[in-house]
Amino acid sequence: MAAVLLTPLKSWLRVIIAAATVGAVCSLAVAAPQDAQPRPASKRPHLKAIHPGKAANTKDKPASKSEAKQEPGQKNPGAADPHDPAPPESPPPPYEPEVLRLAEILGALAYLDDLCGSKADWRAKMQNFLEAEAKTEDRKERLAGTFNRSFHDYEQSYQACTPNAQIIISRFLSEGGRLAHEVVNRFSAS
Image (cartoon, rainbow, N blue to C red; front, side, top):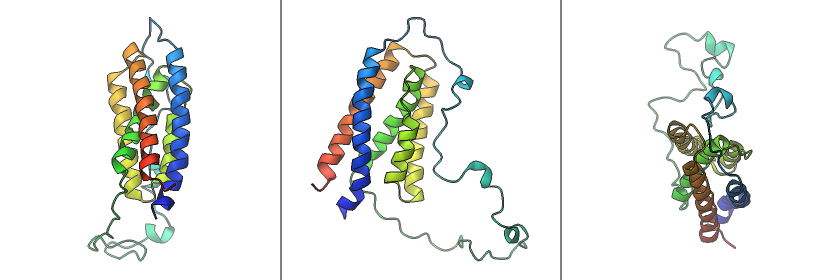
């Protein structure tokens, strides 16, 4: 059972390890400009939060004409009863804390690495991770929420690529690689 759950995670972690290794070498090779000026958020339109669910504009629209014409008080046959208890959620995998930390690291790297001029697409890596690892909507929301909080925390703290930002990038690349190795080594069935 654990091998089935870890197969997508193992392949994704190998990608992260390779990216972390390449990213660490690249970030150490590129020095921060001495006169680093903050780039306004409007110049970074590709930096968006990860949204685990449907697109925001589809939430307010009715799914069908019959749903739009439904009388108040009528029960929608496809809708869940708010009084019914939610199905019990399966327990998180034993490597959940490490996976949440990886999501947090990816959020920080998505912001800081772009701020410092890197071309690595950490947001796409997180999206791939969500597709591989998060099978339930609740899990997707937890992982995406962790990514988004980290992204926004660093967005508030750093407006320019500074030597400290580069040190953080380097440390997060190292920690992400270490966590990925640890999860694969401890929880995979060889």
